Length: 194
Image 1 (cartoon, rainbow, N blue to C red):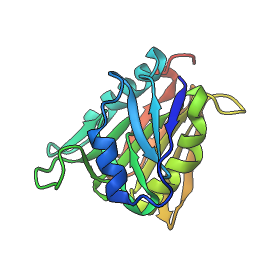
Image 2: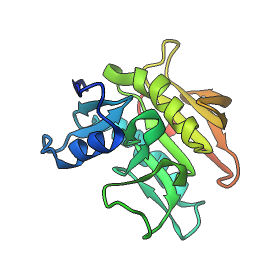
Image 3: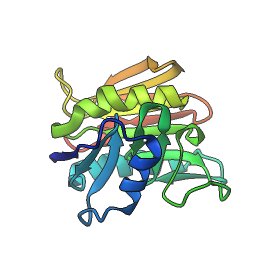
């Protein structure tokens, strides 16, 4: 999957970026995010990418409260990092009192999950975790199919400023445990390519 970036005027503010992101007609099926004030357009994720996200989603459904949802295409806003991000999965309470139909504040999320794509793994490893930590999202699960030392899964938590602490790391094929409120072990041997 490759990405196209759309540069904006450097002095544009958050509201202008969001308005442009909401109003522009983007290619159908594409994933459009604002990452560090740059609008990034990516193609739809590949099949194996989706299989991994779907496997994690199935496991999460068994442990989340009834009033929470697992969302695949929900944008979360991090204005302080000039980010409108669309994780592969967002776990958040269901709410109808949000100000927007296009996104929610990132601080509402309890967990975000990203599955790397080869062409833009840097965003999932560097830019997005900084934004998620800044927003105070308690847990970030990175499924890195393209890690330099082989496919790994890293659970990050305890956000402080724009940095997470790695809580656990597993190679594909090993289990990884999500702490409360999930208390869930994900068997990564179910992921394709293991």
